[in-house]
Image (cartoon, rainbow, N blue to C red; front, top):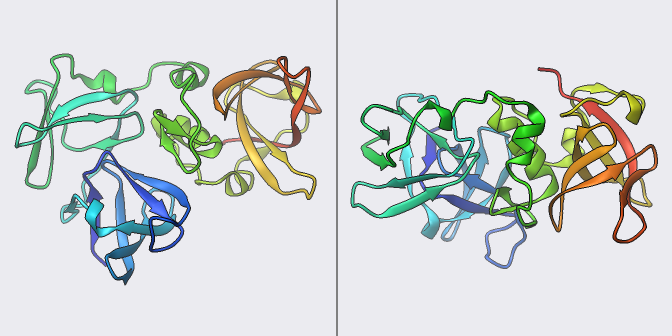
Length: 254
């Protein structure tokens, strides 16, 4: 089955073949996918990065076939670039680029070559910082259901993005993320980067955040923010109470 590489900044991935359908996730620039079904002017696809399925509008499609099995490099920050026709794109952290040439300040995908800015270097794709510092890059990013990029992100999209930037693949949704890694029994035993999960009154996992430091969690709730956390859950000072009830703690094995 043919593999394609997305050349849009992002494409909404919907639950059904309609713009009225819920946006479940997004396919980011440079990410690969396969087409598994078709309905009218919609394709049902499966992403290669996180094996997520959904529908994309054919009108959104800008893509190249991955005939060479290219390896993508994940951006850790925004990158201004220009297509062959000189049109402008701003790629966000989490997008992937191919064949970067830091001397010529370009990268390419298929037949397309993208010019970049004068400071383009391997600093855009290398991570020489703590996981807490990586998470802090996205502080105040607004919350959008189904979002996976800093300009609009949901809770599990945020935790997935932090680990993706660091070269580690985790699933898309919080109910999937809670099944990976090693269990941590107590908040007092957590380390930066540990994922903390929260449930509703029915015991369903509904939220995920990341330990930033002892007693602090960074998570996407309205925006990417920092709150206090203890054995009960997330305590928000502005409401003088708990907003999320702690269910589980998982440590991603790297």
